[in-house]
Image 1 (cartoon, rainbow, N blue to C red):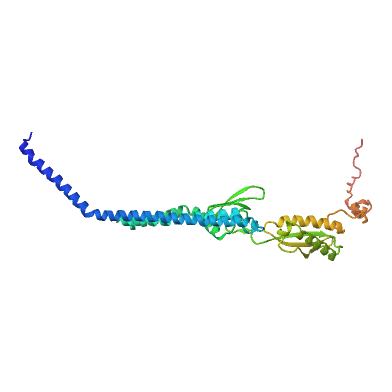
Image 2: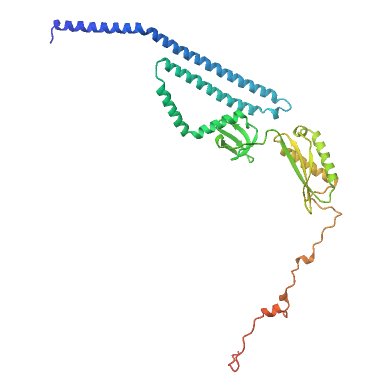
Length: 356
């Protein structure tokens, strides 16, 4: 066991080392506290500015979207509000655009703030940015279908190609749009089925609810009818339809008799057309057919397929139509019958006869 005299210098050395370490730490803190405080304040300032800027941008976008929806609801109550502005379509379109803009704004602001914080901490950003670029390329290749759907949905919403309530033909499916998303568009078909169509799969769009539509009606009548009389009757029907509600709003132009669409020996086809509100052409066509049929019956104009007139004699069928043409084989003395008569075998002379 070492003596106390031996341990005394060791204790003194340990005390001196501790004192020196504390002195070095204190001097290090005294020399660098200003730098640390400056870095901390800079990081705090970056975070506060980023948070305030993000909140202000999101509130501005939300207020803008709310104003758009309010204006849509105000116009919806007018006479043409249902045609000019579809509130649900406007709301979904604005919400989708607002969601995209808010996400992009948050990503840009927070991403820039994170890079500024790392730069303030004296961290080299070159390897980090290179790794992020490689990871982004890998994710882009792996999820290219998702990226394609998302980008197609963004451009579709920004360009307002279609919206809720529109009847569209998307190629892979057709029907009425009931929901528009950034990745999937939901359609309701004519039979009530619901189609989920990826936006990236839509190569072309046929919107049947934009602009105006055409109602076309064809009527087949007897070729002996007076065309001038037919035109006058149809014009009377058109004038009556244009003065009644709700057809006066659904018709965007006069009902026109385009003329003869087809002329045959037993019938002729008259073509009637009218420009209508989008999506109302089928209702206008049904109403036109109904009224034209009633008007033709009242005016005595016969439509192909109707009942014959009482004064018109019924056609008597030809009794000889069911009789077959005479055949040469019916006469046994005809050359054809003689040619088909079997020739009996010749009897052998002097041969034995077999009888019963």
